[in-house]
Length: 325
Ligand code: MRU
Image (cartoon, rainbow, N blue to C red; front, side, top):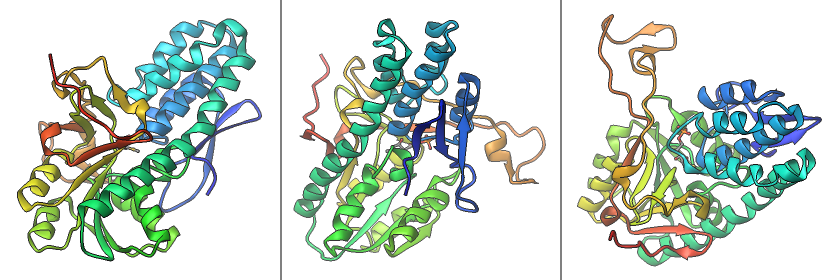
């Protein structure tokens, strides 16, 4: 599969994640406006992919030459929860003094690093999964999409599945559909099908029952921001999954690159949680599925306390949480 985020002929080129699984197509984004729009409607999404997109967005702004600092801030704040977005923007912006070509070179270096870091992190996490479980082959549970599509390449939590599948160690993956935007059924299931890994899509609310029936050997999720104490912000529903996993003694493993760690934030309580528009819940396609005027609470992420997590794994191995002072 091509890179999820790339650069060609002066444009940011992304796999259009809104079109999947119906159509596999790319979009060429030539302005910061186009890129911010694509980020906000989740045509490009997933924490590491957002970091790469943000960095390339600074290159777009640098070549255009107007208000680069302001344009960079607009990119960094296009979505608030995944820290990788600001990280990518800041790193590329650090090269602005050397000109637009240097900004682009830095952004492209970040794209090159991404797949390598994700392969390394998910390789370490595969070792953790094998240490924490006894049954072979494994029945894994995935939430949201933390695969190739959420990164430039390979994936984080789903990268663990690729490593284990290569070794013939995966029986199947239970894929949470991931309400309300269905990143699990639309994107993760599509990636697993492409790779020939057996899977079943389930409603998010089936996960606890699956664990109670002994159908899950390990839960694997990605992360959008990791606080210094090891609390993890990830797609809404992750916290409930972790509670169910702890109750049933199922290992719960988080996989992310170090760029997802925000050491400036002591605990998850300080992580800003994006709230998205009501229509994501009141409409399904063209159909209305809630009464006219229904009030809505639609947080896109939640925070899982470190105490519920078996291991947070990055390219440096298992992270040791820093206690809150
Ligand atoms: O709203 P999204 O689709 O950008 O949310 C993405 C997630 O929560 C992913 O699980 C997370 O970014 C980890 S991706 C490697």
